[in-house]
Length: 556
Image 1 (spheres, helix red, strand yellow):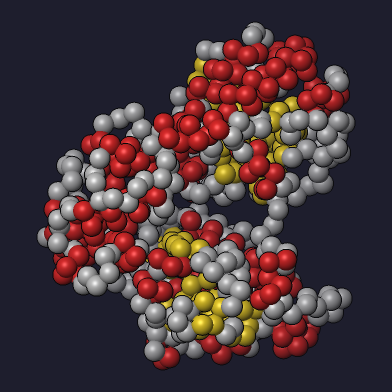
Image 2 (cartoon, one colour):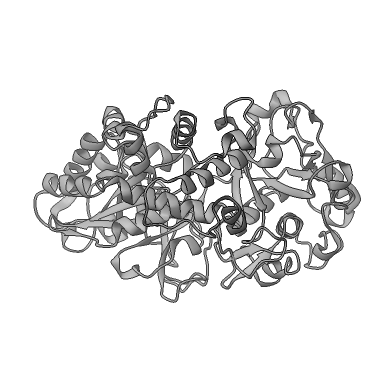
């Protein structure tokens, strides 16, 4: 745990919650009402400087135990973009030299870097925080109120008032408006605030750029998540803290969770890791595997796959389970895993399964204890596997944003989860068949482009009009109502129409603001935002679709 990693995690979590919007007058409400993990249960607001300063407060508090209100924590009401530089300098941050031509530090950005556009230094009066490493990281920010002003209603009315976006696509990056980058250095901080150094060896200073590739990643390997079924049909996945969600897909060979698709799409839309499980019953193992794979087929390459091994399936033995797992692997190219408790595990010889497939284990000395939030209990040591990949440590957990109990889980290794999804040739075939293949940027609005649009907008198998309707909904959220009104004379695009000049203008405006490389070289606002669905606009749409995830319901 470092100041940088905690600050980045909190900032992104705040921006990922749809009930946190933008307002300068109400800038402190998110900080005053968030819990210790950065969750808010009611609509609140932030502005750009309160988001960054508040996230840094969490980082210093969690890392050094500094009491809330301690002078080492930057007071939100005292800091804004015009005086943030000295405020950061007094709390362990130093400016990182960068190339003025591309506004990127040598070796790229690092998690927790604060990127400032100070108006008194020639900038725009804005600040963001990097939430991943690299030359083109994701940055989290409090951006703008729903009406394009600095004073909005409580909560995020558009889904874009607080947001996480790619650095290269940010309007201030494209305008060259950032003025400085600031990075935390623990040695400097402890020299400024020596009361926190007792009993704590200082971290080494930030490595030189040449060493960056071998440095330890800031993000933790572990993650927390939940598993759900139709019983949690009313759960708002986007509003709940979960790094991953495992959804019940099927049972036996005759049941599909009726909420599976909506629960899965909500998980992916909220940028959380997705998994599916099949609840085994006595019968034909291979047939149940085929039934499971068929039900989740549209999500292939996006989710881990699991066999839920309990109840009356257990007496069928490890051979049945291995047949199921082998069949899933052969059909998908992915490596599935198995879920079981201590009774099922200790009653049989699982050596043949354990050598090939990960374990999701329900058990431990404190299992079923009531949990008010996630915790990090000791991962149990079990037979055959040693340590499970996922540990389900309670079925009575409670999380802000949901009134019922939940199964709480700890994933030990995110990279291992991602490797499970894997996939070989079958994944490639699936992508091509479902419209997920990369488009040729040729300016032709043909079947391939329509297919990719359907894939991104979650409407594979439906007519084009439904994909366009979802794209219209996204544009209404992404573009301020005031801008839509200036472009079209309306404050919202109607959602019951196909492509028309009004929709094209709003799309063109969004490309100009978010993804300027999509605009032909040398074209001005008047050349570009003309409402003409011509080759240049279609090419920009193809570029946007290539940079978008399937079933994400949004561009980029």
